[in-house]
Length: 64
Image (cartoon, rainbow, N blue to C red; front, side, top):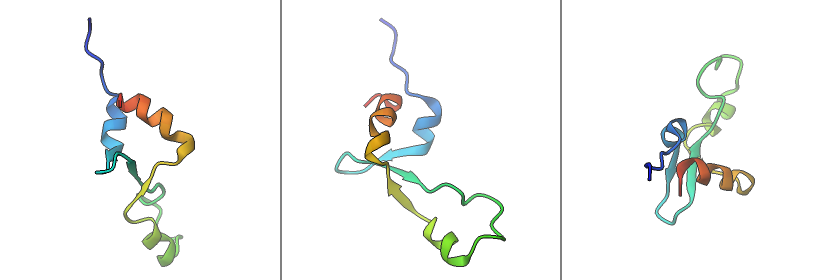
């Protein structure tokens, strides 16, 4: 039986928390930052949790 491989891009983008939830980074914080307000850029820093609507899809990619 072949090995079950994790989706390569998913393992770079998602991490598991201690309680088993999946965290992700915010989008829109990599370039073209001059037109974005300071408040908007500050709120994009850090992690947030994956939404329930996408949770099954992400778990499938991570083979959880």
